[in-house]
Image (cartoon, rainbow, N blue to C red; front, side, top):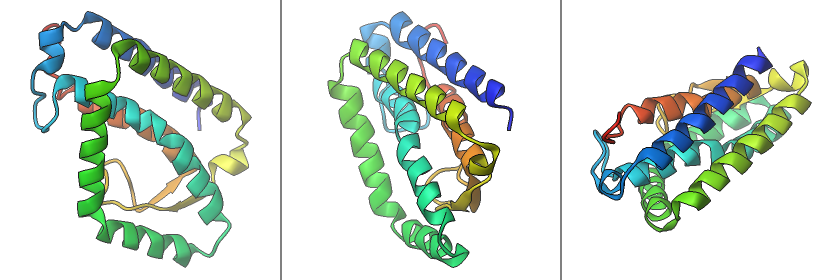
Length: 172
């Protein structure tokens, strides 16, 4: 894994997030996004959420990598079976966060999260980055059946870039 490339992706997403939020008017943020049930503001929070969940996903990989492969496979199957409730919670969380958090808090949270991810990535060894587990492929189009820590570090930017295309901001 090219850590420098991942660091660059994190920074590009951080700069873009700032540009998107700083450049959006109130009406822009309240406008419906394309292809989701969220407003642009709520979708921006959902894009931030992709980075926020990485800490938990990294911990899960560390746990499940130490167990027999079948354990994470069954766990992923269980999570796939719970896709409908997950989708409801995912929608509601992004709706709520994007509705109530002020812009400056979203920006600060994005900055702190990316800074923490930079630090964690710098401490990863090649051995750690090769650890992996099975994932619920029905939860996100970027989850694959089996993902390593290296894959997990790439996930939030893939998620961010995908949803960025759904924003309907004036300058986009």
